[in-house]
Length: 290
Image (spheres, rainbow, N blue to C red):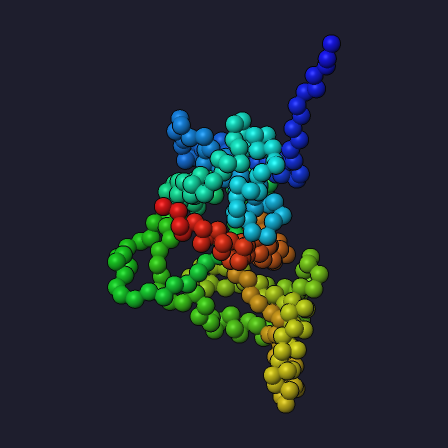
């Protein structure tokens, strides 16, 4: 009598299993497939392709999305992505179709839907939203009726430049130090000033950063070494203004306004990867997909 030894295959999960588990907990794959749709003969759905791209992007490699199939070789793809999905199924055509469908559905719509679902699932409190506005130069006549009343919540093109200096604000940067009070953030002081700028009652915060003040003064000393006395007299060094039409202190205190402003920096840092060279190789690869 002979005993047979079962054939055992060993495949890696590494940290990819944790990433896949979080994606599954959020319900990302099902939500994307709900927004995009799927057809019967589709082996890898758009949601599963996005999940694979996320796992690859967080796979601690220098060139994400490059040689995509190779990344999943030796990994338990069926466990990570779904039954029947093998590394060979995650080819350029699969990724290209998924990206095309995301674009057709509206990337912004898909992203916001997933972000809100993830925030709700993880119990993230949404007290405010951070927006990064941009200015664009345009020529020609505006098509919209300028005399018409703007609809609530509608974004309309406005003449002017968002970075034009505001004389009233420039004058506030020279407020005396006695008006500045300490905030809950170490190294920052705040002076509150009321304003009716553009006909809207607002609360302006003149913020003084000790670190920024020291940095600004050093730059002034280098550029204006011969006028050091004049440079040290510039009281507005290290100060900036935050404007808000939220006048209810219970909703946002002065310190909370400053905290929300500082939080914007983390939002911007989170999108720096969009300009990384590591995505260039995929962009070149994607341009060849028809």
